[in-house]
Length: 97
Image 1 (cartoon, rainbow, N blue to C red):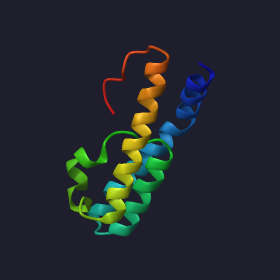
Image 2 (cartoon, rainbow, N blue to C red):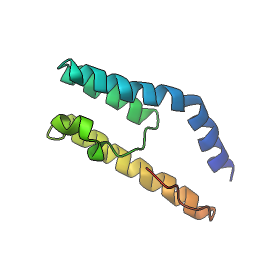
Image 3 (cartoon, helix red, strand yellow):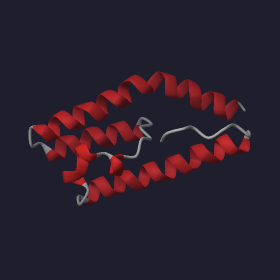
Image 4 (cartoon, rainbow, N blue to C red):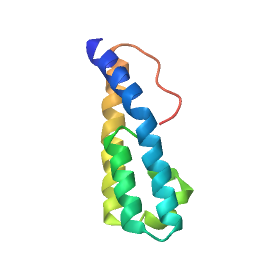
């Protein structure tokens, strides 16, 4: 339970920043700055962005990029870890990741 609480507390501290990095990536992409967009997405993922990037149409042009593919693999692994934590405490699964 302490681990779950710690995860929630950490999430509260980083949630505002990770969505900002996600949005910044979109703006960079609109400007044609793929590397900057990927850097921002990497920051978002490292800060806990779990919403599946590969399903987001705004990043469709990045899907073939190896760096983007690595980010989606990182997300998949992190989602599995979070789901295992939820299940270990018999909590209902979150509606969206």
